[in-house]
Image 1: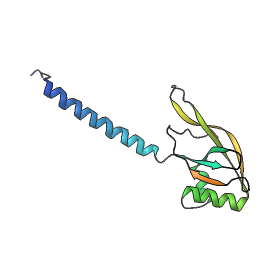
Image 2: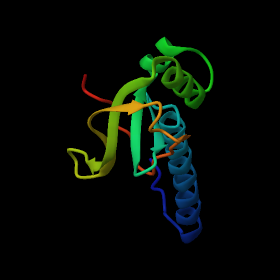
Image 3: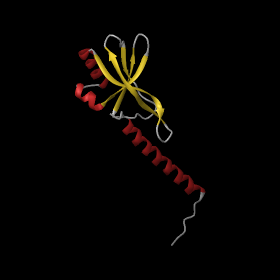
Length: 128
């Protein structure tokens, strides 16, 4: 059996290959995170702004199309929607994530703008 000698060149090549593999795996994980189970939106009203989350199942039951359009059409048709309010919190491992904080009702006449929100942290799905 032959011993492998780790020369500076081999160490460099191994580091580059390992780095490329790590970037590819991270990209795959981020690609999966780009399709979250929960879609986040920022609802701007006359007095405040709230970040809300709507599950993919709720959006699918409300209609088809772009998530922000489906939410807006549901709000106009129903007059109000009850959704999860989201804020930054801590995961059990201590990392930051977007977590549901409680249910809120968004009224049609109080919402002046709804815009998609892209979280800088992973998004936790509501428990119920």
